[in-house]
Length: 119
View 1: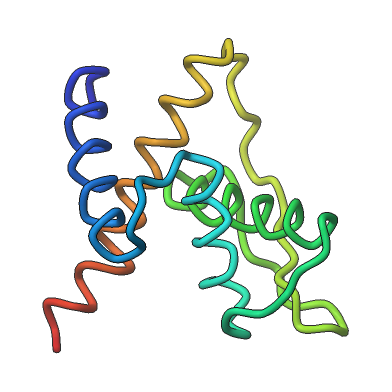
View 2: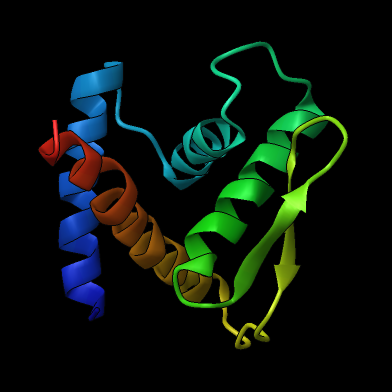
């Protein structure tokens, strides 16, 4: 996806999430939400460390779409364990954000909106 297209789709996704949650989420908030979804234990109180772990889960999940990570299983507490399969390219902060946004958009298209279309 090109930069302009990613930003356009990001704005559309942010608007949809804003309708659900009442405010427009930033990338970190969206990653947190994906992490909670992927953990599968529902909303609950998380420590600061757990919130960071949830964002890591989300990054691994969305980058797994492009083959960077692979789910290896779950730990004893039911948290996903991811393995790096393909080295990430060196990117500056803006490029990292764009890469994540692109894959977050893909995640919602493949994992969330497709499921809603099937209901």
